Length: 105
Image (cartoon, rainbow, N blue to C red; front, side, top):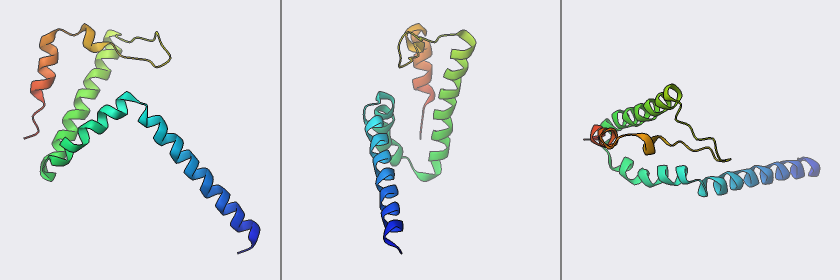
């Protein structure tokens, strides 16, 4: 390879690494990403044959919340980092419903 091609490749690889670092730093400061990562050890402990069911249940909870937010309009757009205020407005029984519905075994 010619020297300029090597330099171009090295420059592009460096750019990619810098982009990866920015993404990593961004996710390290994201409380939602931190929460999801905190669940990872528990997900890894679930037997392989049950993981698809657990993932489907988690996705269903998220879809239910999205539907709840769009149909009821419970959305707080007061800050740059938009936040959902669903749990503040749900009765305690509804929260218990989500917790008791999740059974990975």
